[in-house]
Image 1: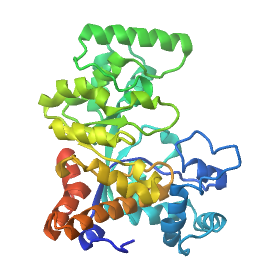
Image 2: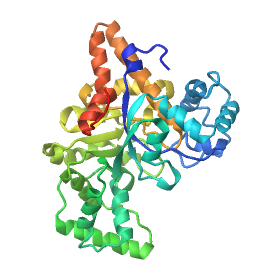
Image 3: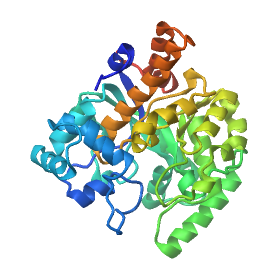
Image 4: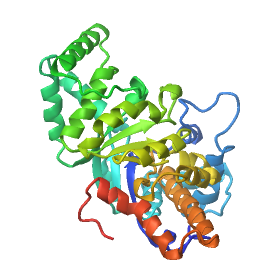
Length: 381
């Protein structure tokens, strides 16, 4: 959709620096609506997610991609989706984004979603791996390790991801973001791993939720020169939002700033202004508002503008955080293009910057920043 967009915004490509796979199966209305929300289930009180900003955005912006008129009724939309089939729907929406590269976190529900290679074939784009650190550690435990060998096995496993361009921490979901700055000692890691292994033996549940080990994994990624993403803010009901303010990471950011390894704060809503502050004051911190932009529908542009109040343009990246539904890819890209175009157009009208400034700024945010941060190569301009 190019209606009302600055020419540069409509034409330049995107690098989606954080996204996930897509469902391969057909979806009924309940299954579709469950993927429109971060809630565990669709509300049982007789409401519908089509009566939300994201639901209205699907009808307005996604319907034409499926050869329907804008604002198609939900039942008509879902019938057309079923008629085309999941593979064709996924192909259309991902290709409509204008992306050249997708940085894929495949560590959540991998058995249910397309792989990075499947996404690449589907959409005709390059894909790159983002390693979910907690999933890596949990796989190490399932494979069998001792407390003494845990650290070396994790390091070996991470080195084995030779296609990885970065890592992701979901400490926000497990222990919150109040992570200490100090690098854990070998004794600290061994003791924490021992406690975790005892808990696994007792409960038969392999789920990492130990502040020391989350911090160890972050430092491990930094030692291996891999950028580290953090889930921040908005997410599902499994997290405590009060513990997901990025300001809680301040001690860790102070401790890691001299490493030269980028730290990427993902999502950030409703803490996007705090994230912008951190991106301004710490040289290695970068931010996005992925996930929130497509859920906010027509208000996505406001989130972008608020984040950019003090965030340097060289520290802001595009992401969709698309998960499950291909519509998330399309809406993420479309809302991002429209929101940033509105922001840049207003500045041109007010003579705050020139059209050439606007084109340069969009290029930074859309793809240059991600290419620099993740050292992406062989990427068309």
